[in-house]
Amino acid sequence: MVDPVTPAPVSRVVPGVAPARPRLTFVSRGSTRYAYFDEPFACLAHRGGYLALADAPRENSLYAFGRAVQAGYRYLETDVHATRDGQLIAFHDSVLDRVTDATGVVASLPLQTIRRALIDGKDPIPTLDEVLESFPEASINIDIKAAGAVEPLVATLRAHRAEDRVCVASFSAARLKRFRKLMGPRVATGLAAPSVAWAAYVPLLPRLRPPAGQVFQVPVTQSVRRREVRVLTQRLIAAARANDVRVHVWTINDRQQMHDLIDLGVDGLIADRLDVLREVAIDRGLWSA
Image (cartoon, rainbow, N blue to C red; front, side):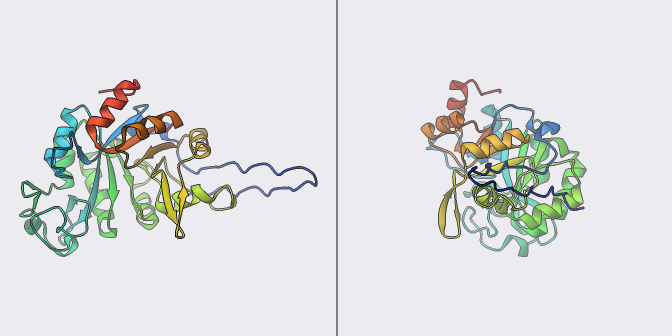
């Protein structure tokens, strides 16, 4: 099922009168319909994050997620790839080389082999099943990193009845479209990279097709057609709020920038530096642990 799109109205040009600025219109079920967005402000632990610069990141490990939850984080952020035998792992890269003591392409290896690889030489790579089971009270943002992970993700979320505590995102519009078609509207979804470009260019090209989803997950700036474009603007935030769409910003580790973005009106921050984000959120009265 394709998300319905409302056609943009035709602008009438009246001599001597400046044309009205185009209104950003989103096509989605509003974010307030989803339990995932129950918190007014979301502090997300990026790949589990870390609590101090002295900590080894050990990204996407049960250890990292556990530390985040113990520190009071209610939102975790992770990624998923499918193994050769169709199992979902919580892992960012398409290869094992960068963060483990092993090598190889994830999609070419069975889970049994991947389980022998250790993150930072210490932690086995968890399956998404293990993440969902280990932290039943946590809400989890899941980034689909490969097309082969879409169908297993749908099956896993249904098996765990986790629809209300996840938000699914991807840089690939095709993956998100496939996920929405298989999963239906029960699960909140983010907006893909083409939607980020749409948000940047819509003031100039108002007739671009609007995106579908419940949350913009954006960087402050984005490289579009070889130039750096400011994505996060006051106008985008105002339009998102008017259409019941949230705005989460990644990956923010600087204390002053966190304060500046909160002042701008964002609904959530994704960070590696969990100690800094927690201190800022407490200082601003936004910490709800």
